[in-house]
Amino acid sequence: MARNQLLSENDMKRALTRMTYEMIERNQGTDNLAIVGIKTRGESLAEWIHRRLWELEAVDVPLGFLDVRGYRDDQSDPQSIQSSKAASDLPFDVSGKHVFLVDDVLMTGRTIRSAMDALVDYGRPSKISLMTLIDRGHRELPIRADIVGKNIPSSHKERVQVLVAAIDGENGVYIEEMPADTKE
Image 1 (cartoon, helix red, strand yellow):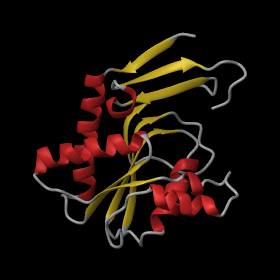
Image 2: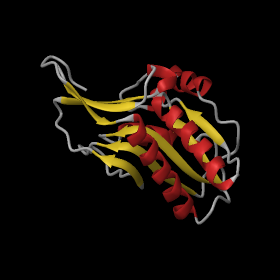
Image 3: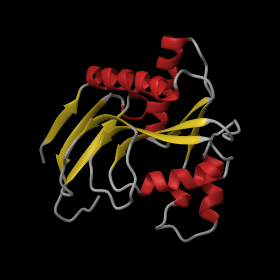
Image 4: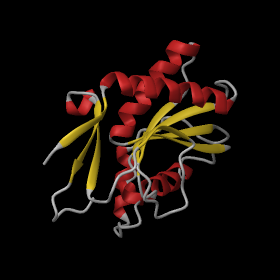
């Protein structure tokens, strides 16, 4: 099965830097801004954006992380929401803040819907914007990213993998054909 690199580590850094600048522009500065990464790889990307924001603007905006597995519409166990809350780390009130949700790959929109449901359990943001490194298309819900690192048209037979050094030992984005018996 062939795996092709779509973004190198340097490509990822450039895309994330551009996305950070776009975040500042959309928010008209850094006031009332918060960054929330969606676990697992969105967490690493949110940390990178947070660091880059510090380097560019010398501000330390609130940073948190959401585990949204228990909020997914394919989960039926009421305990799963409590498990997700326990695995999340959102040490600030989101009420009144412009929250930028950060995820690695946007495809159907279901993870983002889950993230918005989870986020409102922590307060009522004044605005929620979505940043994603990769947008594959294939929406099942009317959700779109406000800031996109790269649009990657792909088929349902392909898998797009975002690798981050903290988890995978390297930074990069790859696409590969999935085995015939697998559905992403």
